[in-house]
Image (cartoon, rainbow, N blue to C red; front, side, top):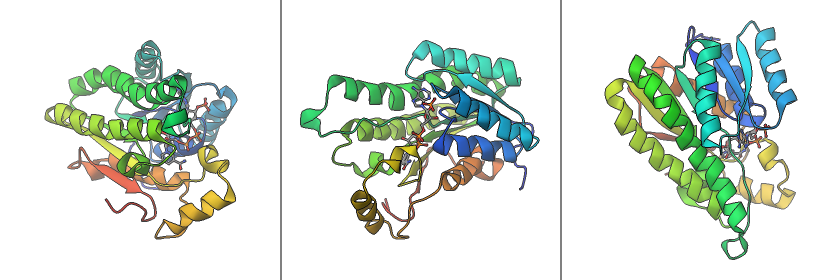
Length: 250
Ligand code: NAP
């Protein structure tokens, strides 16, 4: 694999499972030292670190709940302390608490906004200063096609993910003069724990909406993250790339 990220350091939130784990593996395979953040899945995060080290890479597992602003500041600080710097930030940690608006509890609304939107804000607020100071860096926020087109039963998730797109564009404008790029990726249906519990009927209905007629893999998202992280995307900022097999066309 081309090592586009040799000498770089990366923080990936929610990297113990699913898309985040694939992103951590891909960035490491391209040469980056990676902080593998997790919330509760310590053994899974340790396994991702072990897999990276077994392939000759460098990684460390760091626990932090991204819905806690102080924990986000500490996570950025400990990434820099443990890895010796910070060049790439991937805001991937996310949850879903689905339900129709008329039945949605305050807790389900707040949990998703706090993790999926405020968590991104807290991480980028802490990371922006060191990245601006060194006048280089790439921030990649994982949003969702649901943030682009909405979804019945996911108003909390859609609001958070649409918010991430607005945050991405605003931050891209703020940081561009300091040579820090900020982009977003909007996955469609990707095979992870988050989509594993969907019924076969929902999965088939979803596939009929996808031009390529299949779900994506975490590695499909990881490849797009690696592009945005690398100098191949040197002149790209403020963008949202759908990785959805042809689902949204927006
Ligand atoms: P997943 O398999 O459920 O994994 C979620 C990851 O986020 C886990 O590593 C989890 O850590 C971590 N996490 C959850 N809450 C956290 C918190 N408060 N603080 C820190 N880490 C936390 O999810 P996924 O499918 O890979 O999704 C990853 C991202 O892609 C999410 O932002 C999701 O919204 C987005 N996305 C997914 C799809 C899809 O089809 N799968 C589509 C569009 C967008 P623990 O293991 O420690 O709990």
